[in-house]
Length: 268
Image (cartoon, rainbow, N blue to C red; front, side, top):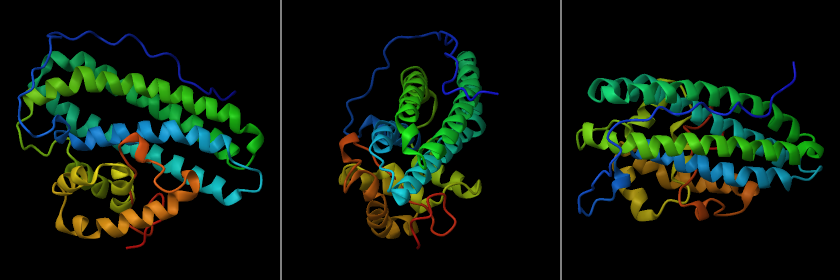
């Protein structure tokens, strides 16, 4: 069976009612403070899918270590995407269905598209594994990454423009639903990517003041270890795209819990 580089075009998204603007209050608190876990994952995926293809194209035949690091990073990112989809499908969407039943068709479509995206990332992972060892195939695989990124971008925009504004009206202020603290708790419970790796991946490039506010959603142990996790992660990923390589995208990468994490770069 041939390996298909790209998924089939997504079906038309069901139109939802009440498409009017969602007025926001004039509070000083930024709107991104709500559902920060979801928004951080989206931003981190966009950031890495923008820079990984070029990192692959620049890979030289004698850079075996860099090829292995690139594959590890891609595999980690894919694991975070899978956990993100599981969080939405099993935790968030059922609550939204209950309190906003008019969104059920959109939620059904998003859930089906999660499965399609997961399969597409699995296929491209096979290609990245080959390209990380055979630089002669790097350019076609980099194009496959970019096409997959465009496919994912459509999905992310639908969630952000059609779903999150409605969630802001049905989820109570102060709820942990979709927040960073809840995401880290779910990763621990699901034996997913470690807290240190995940947090550093998510917060790479985020403004320091915003990082401080986001860390307030986490437990004291996470906040206390954050400076060490951040420094270790930046040092270990610098060979892929240089020091501070994620800052231009406004959001960052994250560390894991130590030995056994998917990236496995941070030892507590």
